[in-house]
Length: 399
Image 1 (spheres, one colour):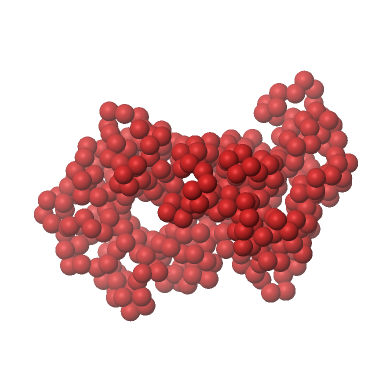
Image 2: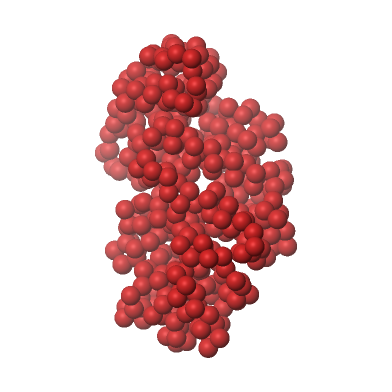
């Protein structure tokens, strides 16, 4: 069943840009939400929660709550008991609130499930359940100014958490935070916040230089070592990971040159990127996770597009370089040496590289109707699941 369902996850962040949950978005082959996900006789739901909502946070593994859409049919299904601690039930907007559904929602709340109302617009019938509702999700793109203020006024008497959906840039994030929203959903964390007069830090310069060298087909171990040595933290962490159980080396190494000899240049390139993105830049953790997952997905599906896998991996990382360094994407080539083909893919989504990147992003963002059709959706799903697992294990290794 699992391989017949398309899945995507969207992060939910708090006001400190910390990830506190993921909405799991899903579609079966017929375009309908699959009730089988909540089949209490199977382990499917538990497997999905572990695979799609596990993160590494401050050195510890955590499973975050999964926000899952519940229509009227799913509302009355038997839900597995373990899910109460791990699932937030999002009651979708077309579920009628009447005596029958209100009683069922109260029953689920009594069992320990958190209740969220999705795409919320105030209706008087909501008074039947507002005392058991934990979260109200408001589509801030669809709710215009007066309607938004009227909705907030209606909700003011209740003890609920406000979640702003479809927050797509950092300016909207700051605006809705000031209005009292505590949770935020959208890709604002990946939006570059350009600070006028901001000087690029030494650490950022090192990583930019490293990215340029990783894109250089004539890169040498000596040149790579020179760059990494400019940031002692990066060098120490890289040596640490190479000496860890991840590689099971026969002897301990103490220099980058030794690491290149034992691991090979391509493997060291990959780990240099992982280490540089894991805690060395002042950006939300979710952005780093997103880029690691994206880069691995690009690498895994690259053969379907006739693209070199290592080039595709770097493409995924560079697709977030604007947010990492707070520079516009069209200025990226001024800071990082990239080919014209890579530049067009990143800025215009043109060429084969551009189609590959677009498909990976569209699939991950639940925009499956925008896929190019050059690759089977099942391959993207498989790559996504494997990439999430890989990113989690990689970040654990460097922590």
